Structure formats: structure tokens, C-alpha cells
Amino acid sequence: MEGSRGRNLVLVLCFIFATIVSLSMAHNHTTAIAVKSSHRKKNHECVAYNPIDKCWRCDRHWAKNRLRLANCAKGFGHGTYGGKKGRFYLVNDSSDANVITPKPGTLRHAVLLPEPLWITFSCDMNIRLTQELIFTSHKTIDGRGHDIHVAGGAGFMLQFVRNIIIHGLHMYDIVEGSGGMIRSKYDHVGIRGRSDGDAISIFRSSQIWVDHCSFASSYDGLIDIVAASTNVTISNCHFVKHDKALLFGASDKTPEDKILKVTIAYNHFGRGLTQRLPAVRFGFVHVVNNDYTEWHSYAIGGADGPTIICQGNRFVAANGGCKEVTKRMFVPESIWRKWTWRSEGDLLLNGAYFRQSGNPHWAKTYKGYPLIPALPAKNVPHLTKFAGACLKCRRGSPC
Ligand SMILES: *[C@@H]1O[C@H](CO)[C@@H](O)[C@H](O)[C@H]1NC(C)=O
Ligand SMILES: *[C@@H]1O[C@H](CO)[C@@H](O)[C@H](O)[C@H]1NC(C)=O
Ligand SMILES: *[C@@H]1O[C@H](CO)[C@@H](O)[C@H](O)[C@H]1NC(C)=O
Image (cartoon, rainbow, N blue to C red):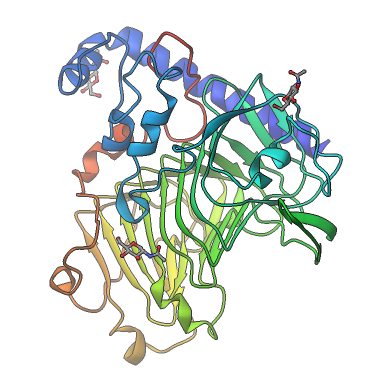
């Protein structure tokens, strides 16, 4: 019941979004053409506004050239190519009845195969996972061309893996998995405890790129990145209706999370969010050109001395919500003022304010980091205009 209501809401939002986009394109042709001609001017409809989207969206033969996406990751997840070196796998069955011997054609069967795979879907699907979906390395999940909803069941578990692309999925109403005997590798079945109820849980893994996904209301977090995971980019995603959204580094007792490096770029943090957009322990997070239009407690938070560099974002404080963007946990100012949390070129609106701390000359310390250059914050509504899994890619036209 909740699930189908959630799905309907997402569908309605997508529809409204698509309508607004097409109306604004129809009525504002001048702008569309101006933007278009500023990059690859192959096609009249191409309105890719940010550098990641420009890398692939203007290609009307995207469906034939799906692997091009593998060259488009930027930021700390750059170089993530997923299943580019493998074959295609077409998921043609939305069921998930057998978690020990998954049926060929299901998403679970695909992610457990030991080889690199580029996974696509044969039709629109609503996938309710009966238990957490345990990935193996070198996979791309490519939802382009269909509405793929992973909802009402367990979420994704990326543990001890590397090189994963997750693109174009709706994930919401994720619940805990009960645990039990679950296959976690092609040749290994083991007993698992309850899963947390995160939409995506990233555990001791690296080279992960999550792009153009829509996330809402899950039991635990939307994306958790923990246990010395690193080199992750989360881009072009849309987040709504959730309390504790993104948690990077789960415990004060895991200084191994100092290795954590995450880029958050071109996302829209929207309606009904409360906190952790993200919350960070120990690591380094680059937050660039995102749109924050609602948080009730705080947007950017953390503990244990993480470094957080915010550049070119738009923070619009909600009416009646907290105006402060930032929140430091558990220690007095005498300690946190040494943590480097910088705001550069952010647009702070409706009373929003960002309390900076630490080293203003941080850039010298982090030379060589793959930081996406920030564009002016006033462009953020455009840069994030197509955030989420609502691209409605059709064969033969650009996405
Ligand atoms: C078209 O869009 C631009 C930029 O978004 C805006 O400045 C302009 O007023 C719009 N024009 C019309 C006719 O809506
Ligand atoms: C679905 O995909 C599996 C795995 O590729 C294949 O074995 C099966 O024949 C396909 N089923 C249909 C109905 O196409
Ligand atoms: C993360 O990426 C850097 C290069 O940006 C690389 O040197 C390092 O080995 C990577 N770490 C892991 C665990 O993949």
C-alpha cells in the first residue's frame, strides 16, 4: 500500500517534472538553443547542462553507444567503468524469489556472475528484493530507456567490491531484509544477518559511481559509505522524503575511514529531507554545484574531523527549518574549529548560513585531488535540472 502510493507519487513527480521541462523547452526556445550551441550541437533537443551529462546525453544513438557512459565519471569516482569490458546482460524478469539459486534473467542472477557485465532491462520493472542484493565487482546497472523501480523490499549491498556504476534507477521504500541463507558470490552461499534497510550500502569498496538515480523514504539511510570505502561519486541524483539521508563513516571507532573520498555533484536535495546531506566522519568530501532546497535539521554535518569542501552550491533554507547549513557533532568549538569545512562561491538564500572552519588555504594541501571545477552557483538550477531518474531516454533521440 505504502509502496504503491510511493511509486505513484514518484511517477506523478516525474510526469510533472517532464511536463515542466518540455513546456519550458517549448516556450523558451531561445534559451534552449543558446545552451545547446554552447556544446556539442548535434541535435535540436539536446539540453545537457552539466559536464557529466554533456559527456553522453546529446548522443541520439545513446542506446547503441551505452558504453560511452563508462567514460563519464568525474570527481573521486573518475575512472569507474563498471561492466564496460564485459558483455551485456538483459534483465527480463523482475522477480526475486530465490536468493540462493537466482533465476537466469533476474537482477540478482546478473550481479552475482563473476565476470564484468553491463546490465540493462527488457521493459519497465518494479523490483521488490526479498533480501539485500549483494553485488560482485565490475558491474554497470543501466536503467536508461525504461522506468526501473527498486522499491518495497531490501536494498543494494556493495561489499568488498570495486568498479560499479549504478545509473537511472528509482529506489524508495526500502526495508530491512530478514537475513538468512543468501548467495553472496557465484560460488558462495552464507548466512547473513538482517540487512540495515539502506537503499545503497557501500562497505569496504571503491570506485563506485551513482548517477541519475532518485531516492526516497527508506528504513535506514539512502546511501551509506562505510568501512574504509573510497573513490565514490554521487552525481545527478534526486533525494526527497527522508530523515537521515547520506552517512559516510558510521562510527567514531573506524579511523580507517580517513581514506574515504567522495564527490557529491549536481544533485538535488529536495522536499522532505531532514539531515545528513551528507554526515561525514574522518574522510574528505567535495560538495560541488548541488541544489539544496530543503533540510530541517542541517544539510552538511559530521564528526571526527572530516574535511568538507563546498563549492558553487545553492542552499535555500526552508521556512520554519534550521537556517544553519552545517552541524558539528559531539565536540566543542575549540576542537572543531581546526576541521577544514569551507564554503566557496555557495549561494546562501532565505537566511541560510554556513559556519566555516579550518584552513582557508586547503587547496595547497590537496593538490592533485580530482576535484570537479565549480561553476557559478547561480547556474545550479540549470545544472541540476534533470537530477534523478526521470530522463525518459528514448531510442533515436538524445536523453
Ligand atoms: C528563458 O530562460 C532564461 C534563462 O533561464 C530567462 O532569463 C528568460 O527570461 C526566459 N525567457 C522566457 C520567454 O521565458
Ligand atoms: C531471460 O534471460 C535469461 C538470461 O539471459 C534467458 O536464459 C531467458 O531465456 C530469457 N527469457 C526470456 C523469456 O527471454
Ligand atoms: C583511489 O583513487 C586514487 C587515485 O585517484 C588511487 O591512487 C587509489 O589507489 C584509489 N584507492 C582505491 C582503494 O581504489
